[in-house]
Length: 157
Ligand code: FES
Image (cartoon, rainbow, N blue to C red):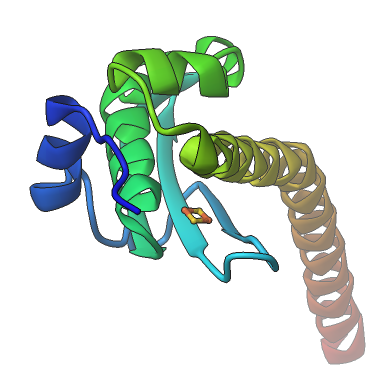
């Protein structure tokens, strides 16, 4: 059985864009499909609500690579809100179509991106809490050191 891949799909499979890792990503996700065994890792770098860099690693089929490649190309420069709306059908359309046996590859790519965005958003909620806790700790440390120094002064007298 031979599958009909579009020229665009073959281009993205043979010369994928944005392949690789981002060290210290703002958002990261790994996603896999238990049925076909394919896997994707997504890495995001976000600045002021915009995706400024996105990379992926693939352990999957030609469509897995091509869908992740075109998806990263499309969402780079988008706001997080815009990227959340990028649907699997758009991935398929942007590739000029996919064989129906391979439609799930585009679904997995979109799910992986959304998972990485969720990871980014969770970190955004946790970070302010961590910063608040650190500030509180610093204030407490200052108070303690002031008390210690005033205690020393009192002892000298
Ligand atoms: S065959 Fe499962 S992701 Fe491509």
